[in-house]
Length: 107
Image (cartoon, rainbow, N blue to C red):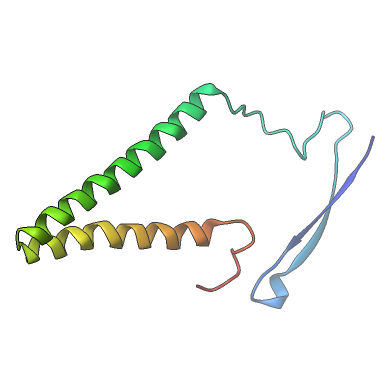
């Protein structure tokens, strides 16, 4: 079964924009969807642990911020808040830039 796949490559420069028609190879099983990777229990556990440790890190930072604000350590409060907020903003910006469909949008 020969199927065609149309790929549109957008660009800010109109001369670089292309439309490519790809044909599936008859000897290959399914090149459009097959990537040879499997999402198993190990990856689900790693993702779950990553989420849990990230949330625990934020909770502990908030506890530390509360401790600094109650005890009048304004400099340490500001420093801790800076090291919590700036990386979060940076990672959100990078995430939005890498998301599908946003590669040609300016932030």
